[in-house]
Image 1 (cartoon, rainbow over the protein chains, first blue to last red):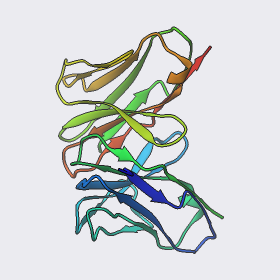
Image 2: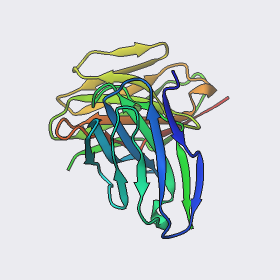
Image 3: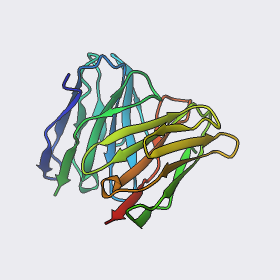
Image 4: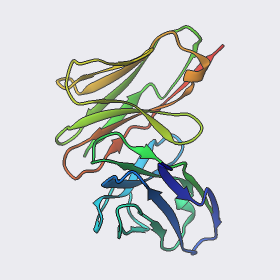
Length: 112
Length: 111
């Protein structure tokens, strides 16, 4: 099992550019989520999904979109990058909400 | 508003010391509390607690939940340099399936 995979590992964007962060899991987990981690702020939930076709907003959803067309994949789209979106992004999955989450290796994004 | 607060934010100890990390929460309809350890990369799972007063233990690490006083502690005995990490507490508020993380405690263990 590969677990949770994320691509890319690093990305530099210019303000206004768009991009998609990829996330995939092979554990047949229903719950998937995206977090951003900034210094001193722990993990903040951006969007989450409780199953294919179902997504919802977390604590900091502005500027991001998600979709969940399959159980395995949960891409995160930055619509128009801003310097405030410079952060480390983690994708995670779990069997159901509120249980042990498995995290991907993270994507370090810099927006200039 | 759902809130998870960890203390202290950082802690420096020497090998062999015992440490206690704290996590307090205010959430709508508590379902579970989880502890994670984050070294250089992604967080890894330590414990999940749902019932008050039942200690979870794994080697030198243990954790307990107090649902009446709305907090949990994570104890690490006989600390080692490999325990140096950020320890994160997360709570399932039981309303919208989202998880709330605290800011974390950065533990540094010196030889």
